[in-house]
Length: 329
Image (cartoon, rainbow, N blue to C red; front, side, top):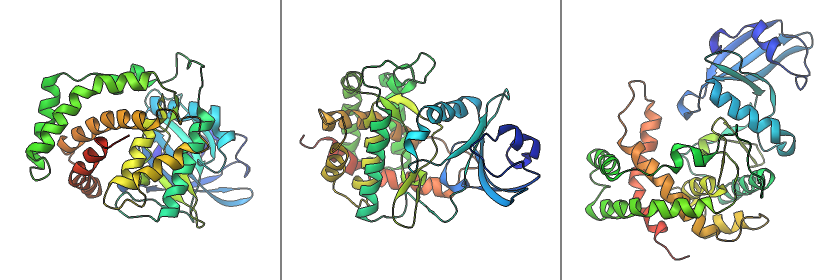
């Protein structure tokens, strides 16, 4: 698939949401390489009996395609305008799945390295709250075949040796940011993870995005956002998403909002108000554990320079994240 996507592939995948007829020719351009999207994304220009049209093709492993397809099959009609429209998917290949979506040309790609305004930041909080409210599962247990955070590495406990080696790798790369007091606080955070997992287990679950940073956002000209890349969608506490959004919108150096404003904007109109701050802090502990692992991870030979700059920025802002973690309720 991807650059070798054929007319036959497209016509076999497009469903009745595609209104432009049978595809007779296609050209593909790779997009989104620098933004860290899962899988491989191409902008397609196709010819049909009604003219030339554009759409986006995303190819990746079957498991991720199935996650995105499952999420969309449940909720896409209820989330019109908040996520890209889809035009069909295939997961019949033993190695690769394919998802076809609307082209968002004319919208602005979000960027974790570029500041946004307070109004746009609040709009993104509102979109996340609306998505979570729609996908809230209440007291209904998820189906056994649905990816559930309680059965993934997210809910694993790391032994002391694994954690200390993780911190040491990150410290060796960023000694100025991993000061003795920061390292001490991180080791204390490690001891707090079991209690954090217990808090999250007792709370609500939604179909969470699991990676709602600014790179996964497209902005319309009116400042309203569309949330992209649902290939990691998982039944999880809503505060997994809120903790990451809090970092991007309030706690890093480009933060457009105060942390209290992010949480209060999310709280108003949502069913998740009770214990929201405690749950967000619990989720932040798990998120920061993974972030430290990212800071110490060996570079892939083809790592994009922008990804490395994102990592550098996260290391420089680590102390701000820990300061919020220790704040008052």
